[in-house]
Amino acid sequence: RKEVEQDPGPFNVPEGATVAFNCTYSNSASQSFFWYRQDCRKEPKLLMSVYSSGNEDGRFTAQLNRASQYISLLIRDSKLSDSATYLCAVNRGGGSQGNLIFGKGTKLSVKP
Amino acid sequence: EPEVTQTPSHQVTQMGQEVILRCVPISNHLYFYWYRQILGQKVEFLVSFYNNEISEKSEIFDDQFSVERPDGSNFTLKIRSTKLEDSAMYFCASRVAGLTDTQYFGPGTRLTVL
Image 1 (tube, rainbow over the protein chains, first blue to last red):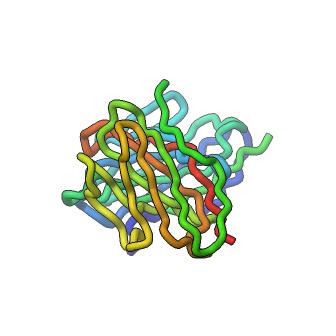
Image 2 (spheres, each protein chain N blue to C red):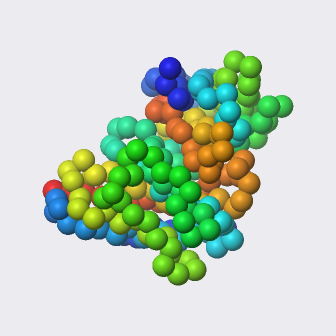
Image 3 (cartoon, each protein chain N blue to C red):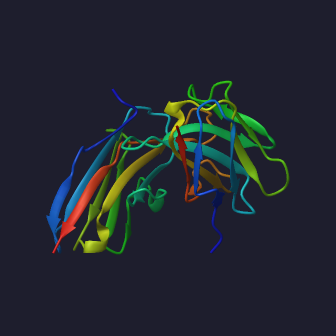
């Protein structure tokens, strides 16, 4: 099992659609979880940290299920500007210095 | 808002040459990282640095790579003898202190080895 796996995508959706991304991780010692957004040939930019209780930021909702080692991101009312690649990142845990393990990313294209 | 900066934005070099990639982390951050991303692939961890020494490194970070914090602000990645397969985007990142703290990424240096 890969350390961090994401839906391969791409996701092509119309404006206003709701889209959900899934991510699984293999290391049960991981302690922190993030969703980053990456535009073409740019750096990853933090979208949200993910907490066990779930968290919401405007149109974005992230959930963590530690028992299933699963993270999700929901985008409601998608905008053209949401088009990007969404990266799931998990810290290695187990005494590591917080280095992040990334998934391959899921590409989202929002069409008019 | 403070941000991580990196120079140069693009570096072209010949195979076998040495390159130094430079980063200025956010000023109150304590942990520093280098990652790389080969075109079309995922972001991969290279090395973490804390308290003026390497704290962890990946299998990618072999003897050709080294890192330094030569002064209070810069953080550098040196590749001694570049190979074609070193062509990638190199991202520097930093975070404050706690393991759950967010890592903030610089804009990256695109390294092209010819």
